[in-house]
Image (cartoon, rainbow over all chains, first blue to last red; front, side, top):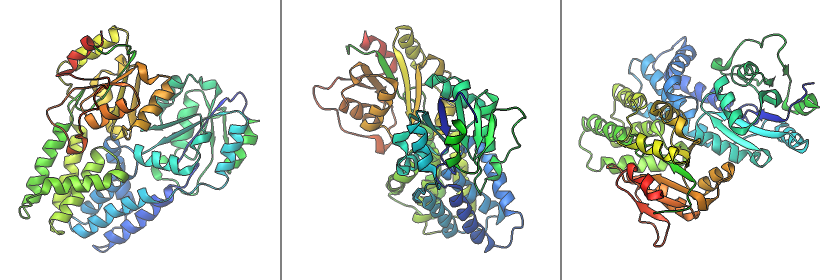
Amino acid sequence: VISGVQVVGLDGDDTLWHSEGRYHQAQQRFSEIVARHGEVADLDQRLLAVEQRNLGLFGYGVKGFTLSMIETAIEVTNGGIEAAEVKALIDLGRGMLEEPVVLVDGAAAAVKRLAAAGYRLLLLTKGDLFDQEYRIAQSGLAPHFWQVEVVSEKDPATYRRVLGRLGVVAAEFLMCGNSMRSDVLPVLEIGAAAVHVPYHLTWSHEVAGPPPPGARFAEIAALSDLPALLQ
Amino acid sequence: VISGVQVVGLDGDDTLWHSEGRYHQAQQRFSEIVARHGEVADLDQRLLAVEQRNLGLFGYGVKGFTLSMIETAIEVTNGGIEAAEVKALIDLGRGMLEEPVVLVDGAAAAVKRLAAAGYRLLLLTKGDLFDQEYRIAQSGLAPHFWQVEVVSEKDPATYRRVLGRLGVVAAEFLMCGNSMRSDVLPVLEIGAAAVHVPYHLTWSHEVAGPPPPGARFAEIAALSDLPALLQ
């Protein structure tokens, strides 16, 4: 049990709704397209390297991912990739943005129980502003949230800034999400509590070590376990 | 003189800092690259059409613009565009994101005078979250602002949502920016005041008709004229 919590932050992608699956599927199609020009043994690593190189300029999200796929395809095929294939990669990105929002099992019920229990809920997501707003709207969960924030990075400075602006002190804040790197470690660093709810797919960039011992931290199997943890 | 104003909203791109110039330059380079495959008489219109078609999925900003340039190049060259040229288009987008922030003449002084005069300042920009945050940070103006908001669209609903969340009533709000479509018309529609400060370049998408007669509206030649207009 984690006590003293008044404001509960929830992550969006792969916490409230499925998202990584669309990246995963797009990456498989990407591999198929690139493979026509010859096998690239370390294609996933090459793509990840380009994504990480671009992160400081593009930020997170589908549009940057699409540009990184195109750039990687050009690199690994030594310019052999054709215009029609580049078009197919852009269409992959478009398909990701158009993909309907599917909630994670039990997420809606957990959100409603937390709201009914009197917690102020903060939806805190990162990625393309436009894509995230679409997902938030489509999720149907926005009315249960006290505040909604889309941020470009989830680091300690971001959490301090968002909480400061909302007048929330770290001691009464708990963040829950699927990314150890984004939803847990920086939150513990500012002295708030964090709950990790693993998702079956994790982007390599979001993988991070366990929290330090003694932190106000818990891991749960599903979001439906969160209300009981707080009471 | 516009009276009763307590909160002044200021647009970022082409109001506080130069931005359209980087799109303009990129578009010229884009034309040169495409022209290698044959002259396209209505290239600007073709690009604009693709941008507008993609707006509902990509939203505003450099990354969506870059994807639209690539898509247009593939279309107008009937797939003749080469991988190295696609790479050059991605690099154009990267160059736009890396371009240093240059403030519009007199913008910094106007912001400081408004802040010193006791107005609460709201920086309200639209575009890529990551790019806008970079520009805001680089501008050095953030400390003078009461609040900073990056939004995906500037329509009446957005203005109502942002003001509602900040507890600002429309009657005491004034928005100032270079876009009639984004900074003026929707603001007048919600009953607030708006000031248009034209920029020498305007993206076709942002062009819009004049405000209705009788609106709390003014046009000024430069941001430096704003403080006097309010006192």
